[in-house]
Length: 317
Image (cartoon, rainbow, N blue to C red):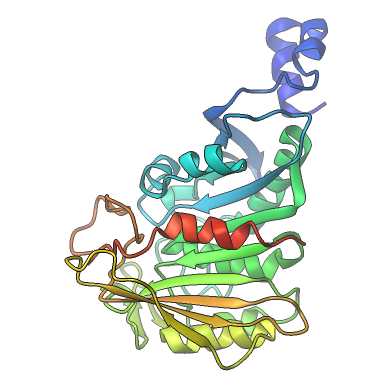
């Protein structure tokens, strides 16, 4: 009996529980809060079901991982994935990291802010199992995106759970210097990355990032991060570069798309270079890291959320 059956049985009795769990009787459309026990912790996540949701069908799933010092609700507000999900027909899940932080670096190097060593890979794997069982998520159409620390976690999941993911899209972060050493083997995963040249926290050319009182971590440059994923995916070394229209000449940014075509693995790599862009989510009207000042410019020349979904929806395992 799954967690929902147990809850309904406890409150209403087993007879009504069975009735409520017939096809089409799960939680209705909209965003709801849930918990999942994993590794001795009650883990939280928000779940948005599209407006035409029916448990009789199968659905793509987008997992959206918040940055440090943020929440799933803030991620939802900034990205508008709920709105896109209603228009396009997919489920969105916003999990929450322990202490609002994801354990995104597999090398143990960047854990200065972690209170405890959370098993976030195991949590996401368990969450996938639950959403597939309870909500008809299509296992071949599972996608992960994330911002900043959530973007690093998305990249860790591309390594650890690559055989379960159809595509990944990290935003607002590069890779710790030692990360590639811990990401050997596994499945190639189509990836789209968005990063601003003027990010004040993760240097475009790479360098040391202070991640807590006693944790200074060296990060790769944007170019070296791109090269790692291009090589891992077996994508074309040479990119097709295209300048996107300057939709907002007053925002101080320009966006360039660099497409590395898929090789025999079928895993392309697409990089959006946001000239003048900061530690921000392009297309948003609000700052995702609302508690921090000086995050830089938000480009209005692209809608990152729609770009990400348009990339995702063409991919399946």
